[in-house]
Amino acid sequence: MKFVKIASAAVALVALSMLVYTGHAEQSAAGNAKTYDFKDPKGVNGIGFFLNSKYEPFVGTGSGVTGTVTYDPKDPKAMTGSISIAADTLRVTNPTMTEHMHGEQWLNVEANPTITVTFGKVTKVEDGEIGDKLLTVDAKLSAMGLTLDKEIVVGAMYLPDGAKARGGAESGDLLVLRSNFIVTRKDLGIKPEMGGDKVGNEIGIVVGIAGYEK
Image (cartoon, rainbow, N blue to C red; front, side, top):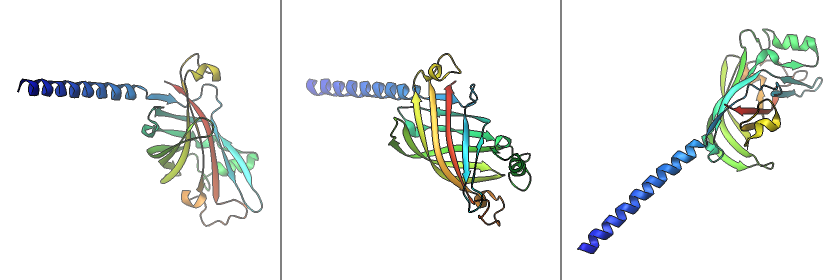
């Protein structure tokens, strides 16, 4: 009987120790999550876009990136946050085309000043080729007064103490996000009746941005 009591006490002590350790591990893991600000002090962050068509393929750029993302390199699936771009910063090489693109018949930037991607559930994590993590994300794209469900792949690269090396801050970590995906004019309600011979229906988006630890 005495042996049974001692054994039971030992089991209880081990269980308690495991519970304390598990709680500590969870707390430590949670402590690795940091929030990164993508309003770039260097003014480098931006996107590219490409519309292919029979007669007039063209490319453009956008800046005015803002947003915050919370990321834990030990738990990439827990990534949350959103990234926005100012619609009136979208430009193509021809100034008249840019003016038309900003107008009511196209982007209508006065009524729709921002384009935002909000990260939802991360459904898959894979190793990328450059040391990043490739996250398959159920995202929401908000633009033109609409919100679209969109699965995208985001490359997330955590760079400890990377802020000084990049410039723009004396210290702190960096989170670099990369992505490319396609949306369509029809999805966004931008002249959906228009054919794609001159202005392509598919819009290819390329993103490469860096966020600084807050």
